[in-house]
Length: 341
Image 1: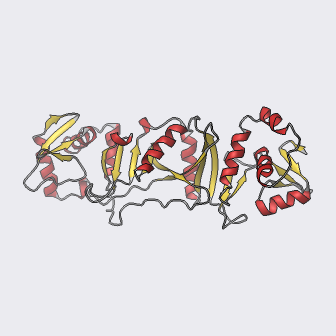
Image 2 (image 1 turned 60 degrees about the vertical axis):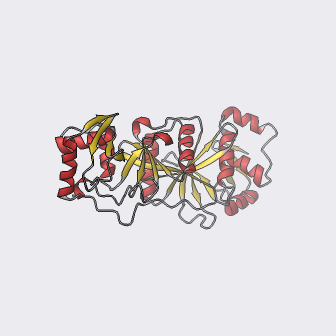
Image 3 (image 1 turned 30 degrees about the vertical axis):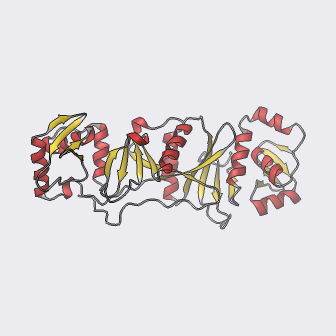
């Protein structure tokens, strides 16, 4: 039976759908109210007949994205998980639903807040960042399902990034090491987009900065701006300021050109570890979900986590599989230095 907020299933059948599968909302008379996507889910998976033979076409006329929502719901529940949709009238967050694992169903606390989008849609970064921060504060995952034009669905987890590394930033260097860097800076020569510094007898004292090449230390554009700031007091460029802030956390940044991003980021010396992160700064951040999906796929193809920035905050987007535990976050080296005061 049609209802202003969905479709009503009689009490006997509705009770089974609600109690065993957590589908729909129970009404005072014992019947259960299903959303349109839940009607399709029940038709596909619970042998529930559609309201009438022309129901799909009539519903699509009112809700053009109905099939997308129904397919996402079907995929989200395919691993035995429980995705409970939020009632539009009562949900103040604007989120599509909440998800429980197969091992802890309502009334236990949910594992994630879930939403969905089409691959060609623009990412609402301000809203996404706020959702991530709110969810993280509550100990919840932020989960997104992206559906393409073939109705294939990819699931993503989004979370804040805790950058930490084991490398010594500028103020943690010894006085003699800083003097060696300053001395080399005084005799720098232009090279490419940056500068070239000579190596002292003891080698290069600051591994975080530069690349040794042809018996010299080559600094790129951002590293040159950082040394100019530290030694000569010049203002940092916007990008160099972001790089320097990450370096203060003990992280080493190297160019990410071959990975389609601003930097690849290391939590230890480049010769001791692989880069855990691929970092994309705000001015290069993708606009559409299909671009995000491409970046994440590339990063995970080389065993790295894709990280992007919005308004000075860093967050990771990682692929996930319904019914599988979330990937553990990378928290940097145990020997991570304390940030200088």
